[in-house]
Image (cartoon, rainbow, N blue to C red; front, side, top):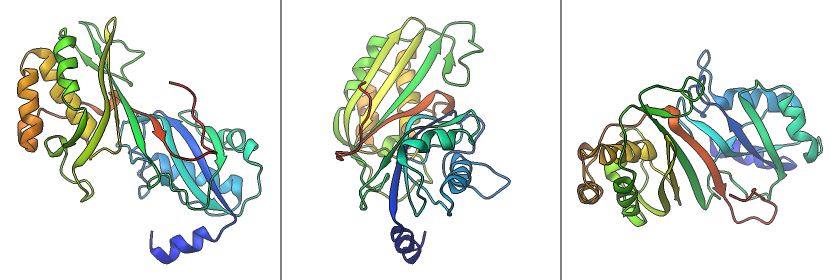
Length: 267
């Protein structure tokens, strides 16, 4: 969006913030695409424009890829529409398809940006192990037939805590930004046949979580040791890390902001 256009949008009366959940399976990612390709943003903007009565252009906390899901995506937009904020979720949800839902709506500060104001983001990645796939969960988890060494993966994940250059887990094609990120949480949790990875950081690089999980899964398979994983991180060489994990297991679950009006449920 050109700077002049951004300034024009900011002259509108209200800055609205939404928390959005969606099943990304049938969409070409979040970011707006040229029809006939459909992304989540295309659908949201069209329905929001109908509710608010003016053209809506969204800014989002993260541009999730094709097939990636969200339980806590955050967007904002400027509008002159007068619908009361408490009525926004129901009004928009009445128009949206069932795989996209507006969970909460807030009147945001004028200088709030869903993208630039974010302090931390949390992603979950789900793996289902076992010989037989689960047809009810195949849209939301990576199925791996063999058992995985959770202790080894836990030990490897702990190496990610702190501030590092994550170039080894950065895919080509992303925005030209610094590869240095601070990881506040990196966990591997087993619950029966399901293994979940949880990552919280001040930002993520293109395909970073999926590349981390793909490499951690190789630790779980016994193909890499935690010590080798540490060397891969230190190398800053994407060629040394493993293949990218499938999109279906990834979900953006939470985005944190320093704002009195912004409220999230407890973890």
